[in-house]
Length: 238
Image (cartoon, rainbow, N blue to C red):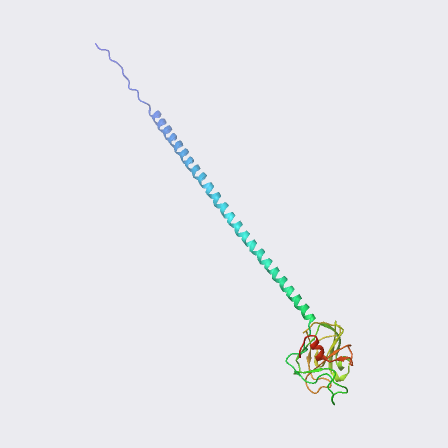
């Protein structure tokens, strides 16, 4: 008689199976998570130098632009300063030249009575040079100087001159302007060559609108020189 043998098939329990599956899944998740993290880390590491390079390039471009702008501004300021200096020097040179020059006291004139002319119109011979011009013509200083006489009654030389002005010049000479309709300067005022000092007129002992012009050795009547000859001596032709 054969003895029956008890053979038992060993099967894993359901709980062990579930545990193994969960463990395998967790391991896969960990592995996948680590891989994802590694991939993400590599992407950030690759992007970092690119971003840094772009920022550095932008900063460099801005610095270059600012440097160029500063250089342009510097050149512009230097040019303006140079132009201003040249203008000031030219003005100074012109003023110096102007101060050394003489000019006729009016423009677009007709010469009438000359120095030394005699006649019934004058108590003595004519003491100046007459420039026939319309009333209101600008009268300018023949040379740089200081006003020593100005006003009616010939500025103190008598009513025959009407409104008059006398200017003292650095060479010791005096210029006189008479028969004026308007006086624009005062005693003590500094004037320059060509500066407007009055308007021509027909005041005083005058036979018609004109400017009576004298060159004197003193500010007073009776010291007149031939004005035409004097003007020629200072290179002014009339």
